[in-house]
Image 1 (cartoon, helix red, strand yellow):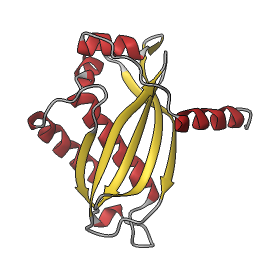
Image 2 (spheres, rainbow, N blue to C red):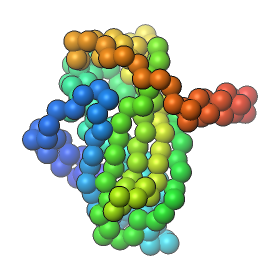
Image 3 (cartoon, rainbow, N blue to C red):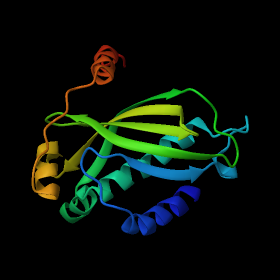
Image 4 (tube, helix red, strand yellow):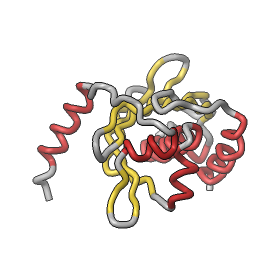
Length: 175
């Protein structure tokens, strides 16, 4: 229920926030609520992943892609994620969720999502996702072209993404 409240609040407030470019960073300011906690009285690891959905929604809609996704009846889908927790978030602490697209190829978008408290990274996640349509997927270039009217130049692939893809390739044989 808490996530629905946060999603509703996000959908209302994003209309009043500035538009973002395809490589801009979305910043959401939040607070750890009691229902975000686990038995150790810090934010539950699974809650980080749930809140990351909100960061991606904010980035998608404020960059203009969200409206197109809804109009075309496309579906954003996450295929893989990797998390690194460095510090705990305690009850009622304020933090920021920073979301940005790092890279894309002919099929996938790769995003970085950081949880930051007082200027220090608490947790960082990498997410690989795509936009699904009837019969397959929508190439990122097509998404950019239809939502922005142009396709930005693909940034160089970060080493972290290369290493992550190598690890995924290694794990692909695991049943």
